[in-house]
Length: 152
Image (tube, rainbow, N blue to C red; front, top):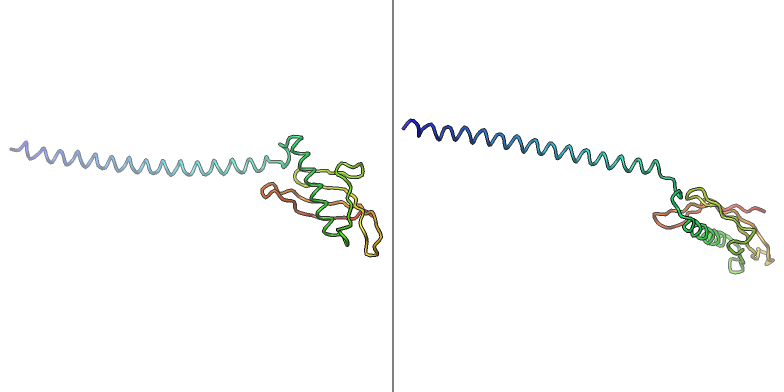
């Protein structure tokens, strides 16, 4: 009979030890998951910061992409200049690639030199040369004007 009394007691001790071990393992598992989450977040942040610091706008463009962006810059420059003319309906712009036009870039910042023949306030046709500086925003695929300078 004494043996039967000790068996439940021993089983209770074993169960208590096993239960405590399971709780300890669960706590260790939770701590490891938290540590992995922390390290994953840190690693992702480091990757983003590294890619931002190493990123040079335009550095990875193919010549074809660069040519398309330069053509886009020229069209945007025409639009910006046209918005500032006294009589935009009379405007005749230089063609893209004309010897008197140029497009230069430094990353996502573009400078476009172009001319336009348009009527002034007196109705006379006048040729004016402009330098248009703008930034290309690739996220929104749009051009943001910095400034327009008349070169005459």
